[in-house]
Image 1 (tube, rainbow, N blue to C red):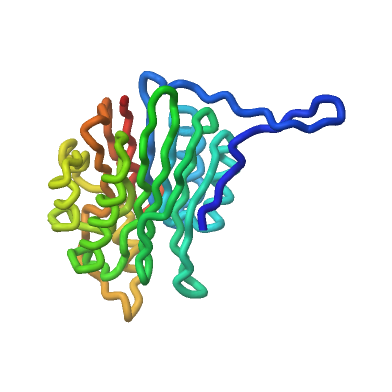
Image 2 (cartoon, rainbow, N blue to C red):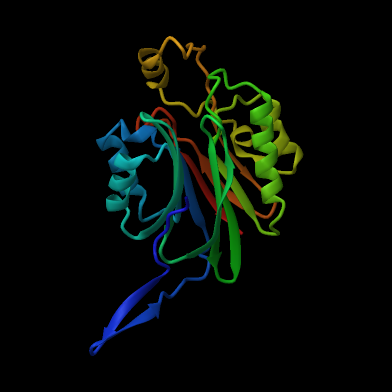
Length: 267
């Protein structure tokens, strides 16, 4: 279920309460979006500090593993952002959730679920209006199992579904998040063949996982979830040709078991 905030503010005139539409800004010279798997907020204060320190310079945050604890904390840390998301309960102890935060100076519309895997995996899309332009953003959390992050029928279908949905809108598009895929898979190559620029490849990013990721993964390993070798990639950012990338970086900081993807762009 999509959850969102009101798109307008309210003001009081005498005893009457009337709706007062928000004033939305035109697109600035440069915009920033950050994609990040929050790992349910396990890192605590370093993650909170990252969100706070980037709140003023970021227009859009796209989070994965944004379950209740960290989602509620992020809302308090980012009060100037509208929030909407989707979640899927797999079991009593397992919930998959993605959440998008959009600065309130922009209007967001056409929020929809794009993909939902049977045993996890969620994708949502939304459109940002910044006069006179619009941008379509896709927030992806790919199918997590099996943990080898290799191709299978479900993962290839997921990539095709996202691309098919993106092709239905004639807008600049940014597709990013935790795809749970290695870089040499057909499921990733599909995006490149569809005309999207793979920023992980183009900027020669060496890894999207934090230094502590594999230590933690080994400690959490369960008998029914075999441990795989160290995998340097899981997260990606793809852009359509209309997006002018001014900077892209993946800082190696310990705020999650994933690293943040930070994209500065113009349209």
